[in-house]
Image 1: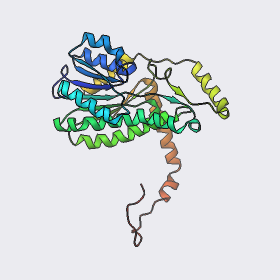
Image 2: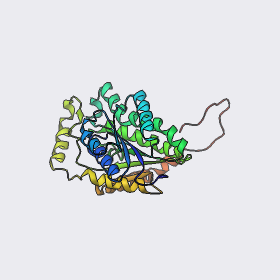
Image 3: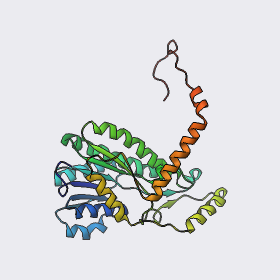
Image 4: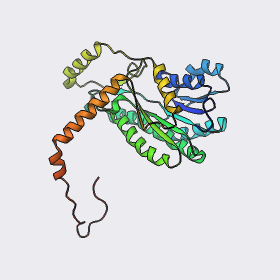
Length: 290
């Protein structure tokens, strides 16, 4: 960062609990200033009392685009700039794909994808103007693949990552960095506070099997470890586009990638036979299908 560790300004969404709270604490411990945004920021009151000049709490619903833009302007007015933007706000809507209502599906995408999009759009003019900054998108193990009962959650994270890859290429031309962080299991309330669809009896057997797997217990990690990794990421002069957090998600990423490559290789002849470049047909307009 151009103004150095200890003087950076962070904008963290979902800052009131879980990973967002850990990120906020780590930034403050480093001597940085933080705008901690969340729908309910009351849990940050004690932290703000300890750091009255370096922590600005901001009540914000990231699904409200106008409120996001206003919140970013308020942050700039208070601290003069932004250096690290962490799109962490998110929630899990659990249920089989068939069970989702339209309102539940839209709510999942509104928070996990559109919220990050609105924040990214709101901060970019400022980061472009200063020629620096780092946007960190908190994704999930769910973006590595779709799993039973988390299909719409995975969809929101797949969308976030696709947008963020393009954003990285676009923002990079102005000196702005973008990183996608894919955490594994941490002791947060993501699952305990999740919303669930109305269960369809057709999926009772699958749901019972999933419950059996979950009953075996989860060995998760303290959010402070994720915060330590995030600090190493933003302190780097050459941060990666993607960063996996945790051994389990690291191994899973390689396993999924290997299986995909094996499938692609097994169907290579069919894939290659489906393409043969020919001149555009007479009267054809537009571009080829991608």
